[in-house]
Image (tube, rainbow, N blue to C red; front, side, top):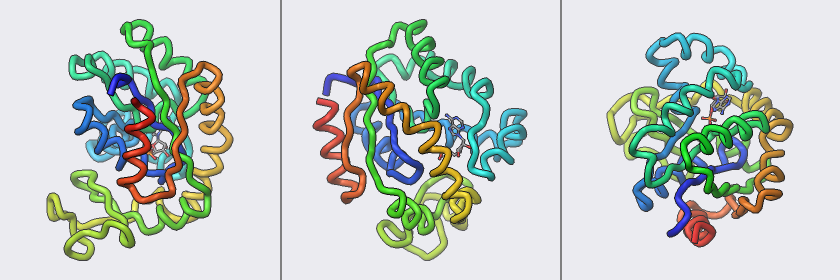
Length: 216
Ligand code: AMP
């Protein structure tokens, strides 16, 4: 694979986290999820977490300013030298511009955006059956990838939960925000010749194969 500075685009529940983890192992580049970073900040009660918590629980976007520095610091770390997989950032056109500036400063402007396409009704069903580990962040799906023991995390033994923002009314709000703010990023990267799109509604192993082919 040649191109390793990657952005995963697609609606919430498209499988970005699952695919990013797998690609991260295969390409030996870090998986950087702003959602995971924010959830960790909320768990730890940091100033960032305190500001982000209520916004996240409503399914809205945290302000661009709150994210800029954490993304800049993370991308500047040495483990990003061989590349990175951004999952959940950028989320709107302003963030795409901010990211372009950060990457230019870091001399990493060579970038590929991979978009996972999944229809809204598939997303609502998927996220409603998603269960997450509040301690280690592992993610399960009750239908497709259930834990070995019902309600218990395979990796750390903690009790699994339905994320507050995976409740149906919040999912609908997240999808609304996605279509209004995040979907325009496809055109942004397409116009710059940096977009590849793959179907996200096939089994995860097939999605991975298509992503690897798109990466080249
Ligand atoms: P995710 O796990 O990517 O679905 O993110 C969960 C929530 O964290 C989102 O619904 C937002 O409230 C917040 N969030 C994550 N990434 C961003 C971002 N790049 N910009 C603004 N808010 C974000």
